[in-house]
Length: 76
Image (tube, rainbow, N blue to C red):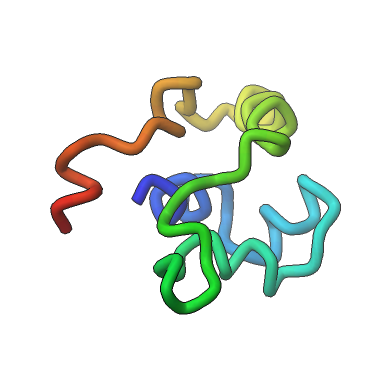
């Protein structure tokens, strides 16, 4: 989290990869722990604007706050 929720809301790994212009493996890595070569559930900031714009176009509820990692996310 929060990457998993954002990816799910926007239609899955392949769709998000298409939106931000990267290979789907890169998007999958957002869900992996840092110890396994991932981003620890974080969506890279460089993709936030594109994802927010896509969500608006698609009528998906998504805000900047959804990208923040909370203490609950860190604990799980």
